[in-house]
Image (cartoon, rainbow, N blue to C red; front, side, top):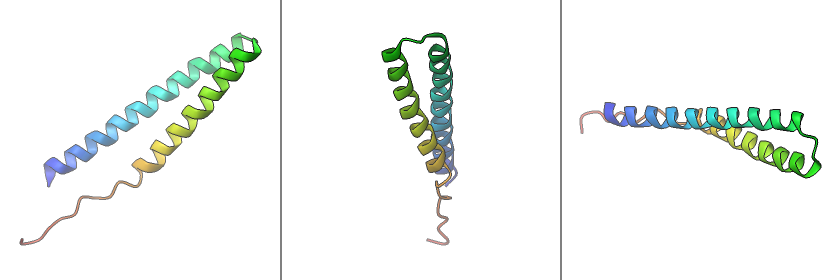
Amino acid sequence: YSSRREEVENKILDWANLANTVRSENNSLQGMLERKHGNSKQNQAQKTINRQNAFSQSIGANSAKIPEPKRYSGR
């Protein structure tokens, strides 16, 4: 049971780290957007930001739904 729980907790940490990486990448893209005013670059960066935000949010929503491992009694 405890090794399964650790496995699940490590997975959650992996996803959280991935979400943070995506967020920081978003921030640097946002910075590029503010510095550059080239229209096609701006649209491209904005699309990436939107896609990554959706990804981060889905990770956040999904990590909250991970159930407690089941405990089996006397089997």
